[in-house]
Length: 160
Image (cartoon, rainbow, N blue to C red; front, side):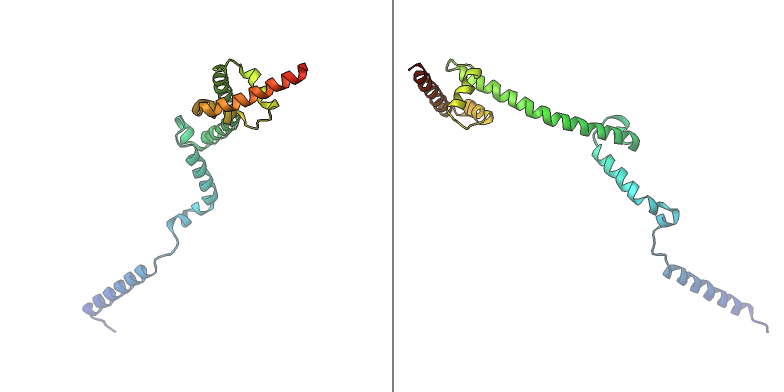
């Protein structure tokens, strides 16, 4: 059977065209990364990204390189733990300084004022007292007078 040259070319064009249609319709649904083998690094990549996200703003390679970043991050957690304690200490010091400055206006030192407040059964902590001394001087004066009068009454009772 002899097929004409024109018939052969038409058949080959149809075959090529049908093959092209099949190729475009059967596009794989999986991504290219699954063929490379990056699918198994999913958890590790998430972990690394999380660490590098937390080290944003660090100096040098501590913000880019995972192995260095994890060490710096752990050290930053240690600093944060330590400084949470120091912050409480520093705030207490500040309240005491403010209270001392407020009480010295009335001729009494902080070390004498605190026992007077405790004996008068005034249940205000240093933070509140310091805030009153700084922002509400008349209220603080009233608290001071109550504590002073109570301690004066106790002294007269002891002397009798």
